Length: 350
Ligand SMILES: *[C@@H]1O[C@H](CO)[C@@H](O)[C@H](O)[C@H]1NC(C)=O
Ligand SMILES: *[C@@H]1O[C@H](CO)[C@@H](O)[C@H](O)[C@H]1NC(C)=O
Ligand SMILES: *[C@@H]1O[C@H](CO)[C@@H](O)[C@H](O)[C@H]1NC(C)=O
Image (cartoon, rainbow, N blue to C red; front, side, top):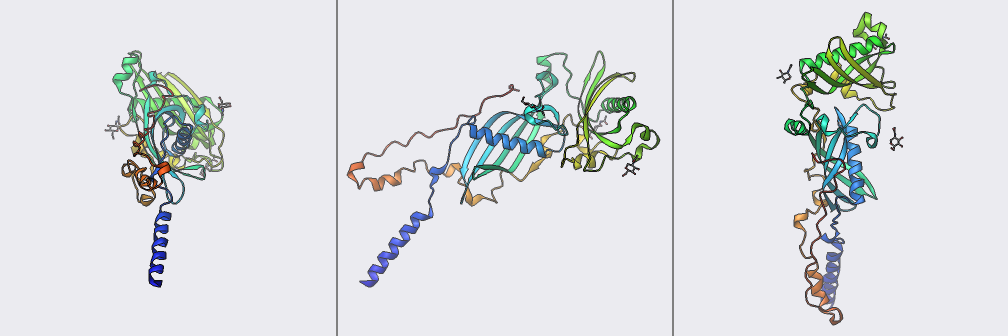
């Protein structure tokens, strides 16, 4: 008898444990819409991360949230998987303007679209990026000419005419301004127009420790200011001939902690970095962090949607039948709610 009681206790203990082992069932999966404020909050965190980390070219703005999945993470928190559609803005990454203040490039200027998959962790209401993977592509030339037949399309960044235009524009700026001598950091984009021939370029610059006078004598000694003083700038120019150069540059104030070390390192060697050879824009794929599909860090912590029990209510019904007060025929599985996605388009469809 004692053995029996002990066994009974053990069984009870075990079954109690068995129940306690899975305090959250798959019911914990949450479905939220792409335009839900919570999705938008996650997208904003992802976007800031992407803009703060991608090392070349321009900042991107959110165009739409394509997909969102929210998975429980054991023991705490949730995993957000986002797919975002982005558009290139007119702010180069050296531009300190917050992304909300950056203008999206209009369709007539040959837009560049970005696609990102971002995985975030939400813990205690705080979102952080675990991994992200992006790429970007310019709109097709056919699309651009369809909108406006005369709109110039993006040119190769290493096109000789582009490099010449940038050199002429920067030389003109340095000649006509008394301030610090500027050096080229990166050509952001270029468009070549025919009849009349004109090359439009945009490029990022860095302020050096030379005056433009110093530079005339020993330009090779002109180096970017030390990191606690670094200053960047951005120039736009249109060059129709050697004698017809329009250029305007904006120099940004020093931003504490912003060094863009990779830009200075990659670009001040005198030659174009290999990244800029044979391409028309700086692809977002050159930056990625972690692997969105890598489950190694949290495989046991996530429940893939596919494995979700289609009708988790069944198990409870078995017990419920014992109580006549709440006995009822098996209810239809509640129609599964699908998120309303993709979300709204903030700018335009490309
Ligand atoms: C950005 O835009 C907001 C709202 O339009 C404005 O209040 C703010 O001054 C702008 N910030 C900068 C740095 O221009
Ligand atoms: C600028 O910095 C470089 C390297 O630090 C130094 O060799 C050069 O003399 C400096 N030039 C001026 C004008 O201060
Ligand atoms: C630009 O780079 C590509 C790829 O390296 C090369 O094939 C092409 O000849 C370059 N164009 C010019 C004008 O240098």
